[in-house]
Image 1 (cartoon, rainbow, N blue to C red):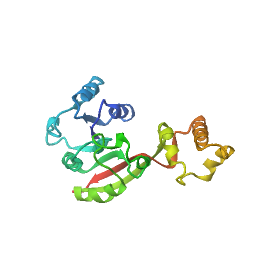
Image 2 (cartoon, rainbow, N blue to C red):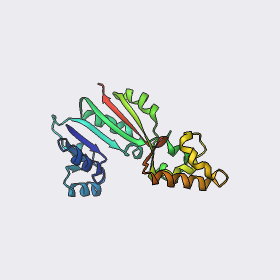
Image 3 (cartoon, rainbow, N blue to C red):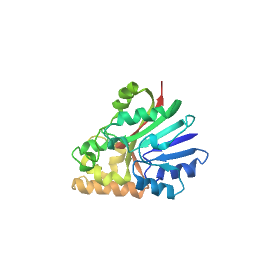
Image 4 (spheres, one colour):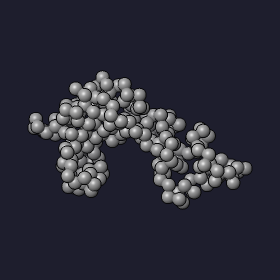
Length: 217
């Protein structure tokens, strides 16, 4: 019931926890003092500075869960941070990580500025969790991949359209534009999916991979 959100930013995930599971005792940490200040203004217990020294935790403050969402791809020594976080976990505690999936939609634009240094300085995929985290003292409890969300359709569908990822039933409505340009077919597809309230394209690889890792030693 004790959780630390590492890289909590302005506190959006902490807000989600407060609304959905108020019984959880959640704290936040962020390297950015400005982000931590915003999170504190929303009523959250958030610290910034050096990790983990700035947390000033007593020996019995080990966490049941530590979350790291869209953080590790930005740091130069992720293994060092992971090991420090592991020391803050209880025995059999959980580390939950969310990072861009280099086998997902981002692989179609490998030279995108947003996915290159100094923005992103490491690349992640399922095999990293399956093999690399064993050496860091974790076992993989689960890996999940985000389906492609609607706010990324315009960006990635034109690139991914001919990758053979489309079920026949999804593609049938687009056949009315079979003699039109690819751009028109994609536009029609996106319009129809949003018209029917679809938010994710299940089976189409999205941006993020999530790993649930349990402390093993």
